[in-house]
Image (tube, rainbow, N blue to C red; front, side, top):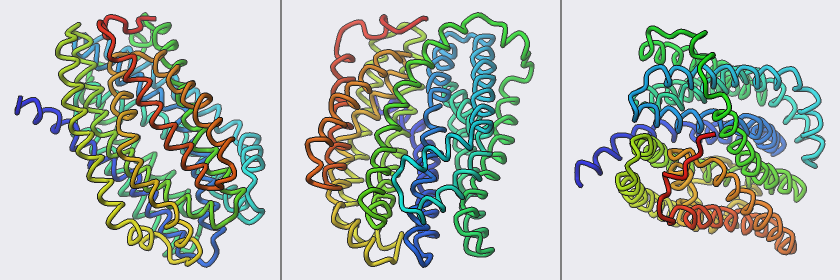
Length: 434
């Protein structure tokens, strides 16, 4: 049993450490922009980042589906199938990215208009979005490469990708924004350069694992139907998830510049929580996916229990951190008195969220490992349209508290509904084959 805990941590800790660099980048963006003279800069970055995140993480199925399929092929020790899933996913990522770049102006202008932001915030959001969108090909292909490496239970590769990309981004962020005075455009351009540097490293790492890679044979391999079906379901799941976060940002913008700026600070903390818990979920994806590929349900559920225990431990640590040091953490990100005062009013939600949300992150990993995309989609639709929006609608009188109440309940329903499906016997025998 002790060796199994070590195996979970051997996969999870590198991913947690490297994942934390992702929200750390957001925290640096927020801190750098948050110390400029006008809250509109911070609000613009918040809206612009959320628009880009909505588009990019809408394509999160590229990583998730790749991880699940590759983990199962790894469990079967099927080399040609590994190459086939990688090639198909990379081709799909490139096509989607080119479509985003081609349609950037209608997408960006419409989204910024719908945000309801003030003219100053909208202007800064446009500066960020129309610069950052050029990283789409690299960002989406990086998702596939990360998914492939995680599915192979390679801890070193994903860690190198995330740490290099986000560390470079932070350095360039400070240089462009603080050193050169490029303000919001500088933060966006730093991300573009870092994404392409990460892509170069990722392709090199994968080439080392598949030295005799035959693109034509891999693309021609059967399995397109299964990949497209799984991607479709996870796409709809990702759309609902991003829709909720986009709504929180847009609705915050309608409540005022100080509210949207304060929510940007708090959402960065939530991203810190989610990326750390995702490190455990990545371990769950790899370990349960391999067990599913081998048809071993006993081992599958064993790994779920171990990963669940570690998720709970990390969630308790985050709850303690925000309960004891939340105000000090807010002060690190912005010295604008109004924004700090507003953010501190809503800190209790950050204290509760880790314990509520850990279950949805854990079971996302479990269902990805089992390639149960349809169930993930149904759970997310229920949580979005059966809980988040109805609860926000009836609690509008609470203002921004109503938004955070709806978001917390949304996270809770995701975990509860996935647990209800998971508890049924014969879980992995119901995995989707397309």
